[in-house]
Length: 168
Image 1: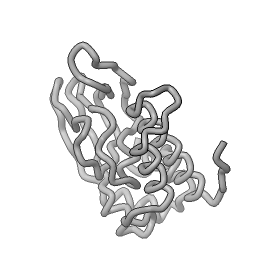
Image 2 (image 1 turned 90 degrees about the vertical axis):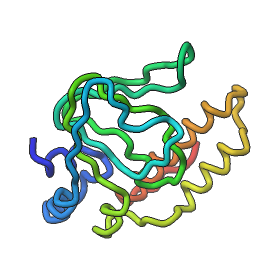
Image 3 (image 1 turned 90 degrees about the horizontal axis):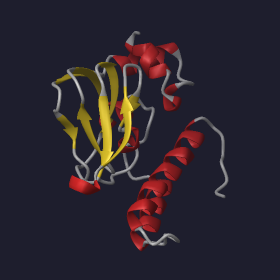
Image 4 (image 1 turned 30 degrees about the horizontal axis):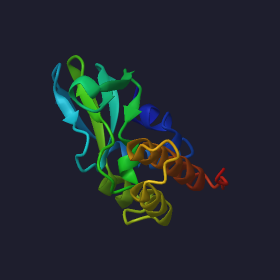
């Protein structure tokens, strides 16, 4: 699969023109990871989206006995996309589960292409404030923070594609 095809499979970029996809693809950096290498740690500052060209990556939350595997991702899949919009720390850890070839796209590269604004976004800031207040009916602010980031990402993608989604 070409870089342009990989990018076009990401909902955020699916409506870009072939020229925009080409420009974005030129900004991608290749990265190699060995089995067991941590790509990023929960709590790290995030600013990059990763696409899996070859290999496998495990996304997990927590540490030690409280560690939960959220997903295992394979070629053609991507992760870290929320970091293109928010300034929040990484909500999970990404670890290569075998030798992996990834492609990294940084927030600044996306912003330089005029595709995403690099500065703070009101919708992201609103989600972060809700998460910080801890208004979780289940009583676990970590769950609220993750849910708020997903809701914000849904709203950002919908706005990017010109569709307005009402909060429910």
